[in-house]
Image (cartoon, rainbow, N blue to C red; front, side, top):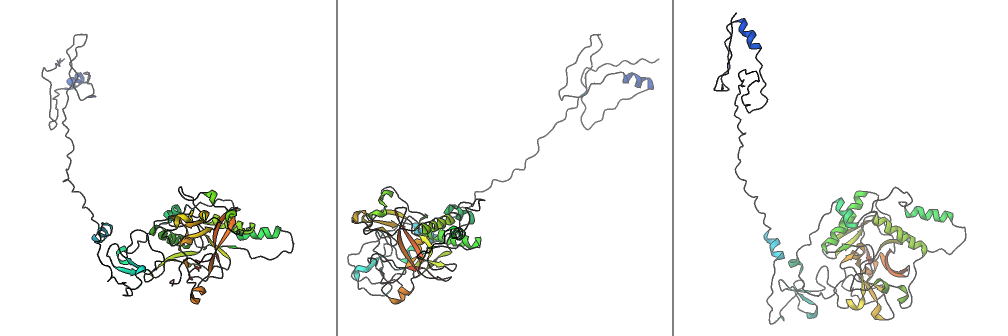
Length: 424
């Protein structure tokens, strides 16, 4: 019987990866003996130290293969250059650049750039940028009141940038509330009037003409277009939308707006018309605006056109803005102030100033009430009412208004102080 002695070599056997481990087996007996030798698994990359069995048998050492792993090569990209700077066009820079006008000693040779005349020097406006002259009535749109502060001619002021609004911005701009599922809240005012009439008693009463609520356009896309035109016009004048009278600190408080202070009294809005007013306000909050569009005309400025047919006695809008004492606005150059309260004491009289906040009523133009053609253009009027003991100004249609027709009313409905003889 052949005996085979297996000893552990002193130096550990390390084989490279490219070399295979081969063992020569002389006979079948050798294979039997080799199968009795325990082989431990390679569970850890580090080689365990040599151990000695308690029976004094020689220590066994595992053969390990050292594998060298290299980190993946990173392809270093060249450093990216910073994006090129976008410079504003020179025309935009010049619009915002500060300027200075050298005052001349003599302005007797100044002529109007429109009519070429130097007459009516008290009506000549000098541009604070180009120092050219313009008659107040020769400008389009005309300047009815002498402006306070700096003034620029149409060429130096540039064209107003009309900003476009998306659907989400229009909803945020007008703070439109989503309509609930309650059918009673979203019912049209015509249905409420029908129910009220049916439930009333059959008593013969004197027939009185009641105010009609406006009928919004059925197409939602058309309503968004109408509201977008109003938002663009308000933004061009740096105004905020407000569908109610606002009372700001430093101006007239709300307690000053009481209809009992009106000299001679003020007509009271009936209960039915008050409900119509509230229904119109509720429709505006839901995004159902009056069928009106704000357009810009080179001659008249911003003006309002009917986008649908409007019937006679339709409540178009309420005149809104900041409420202030008229004594505070004696030298104001705002051309859209509306009388709110004419008190017996002039110091308590109030006006609506839509220079910072307002709605579409601010863009409805006035007529030339000194000419017959101008009076024929009038299709709506401003009426002051006492609503819950407060003064309100409502714009009401005085006749049927066709689609595409512009809206006009008389600025001097109560006083004859506003100059309208030069209106188009």
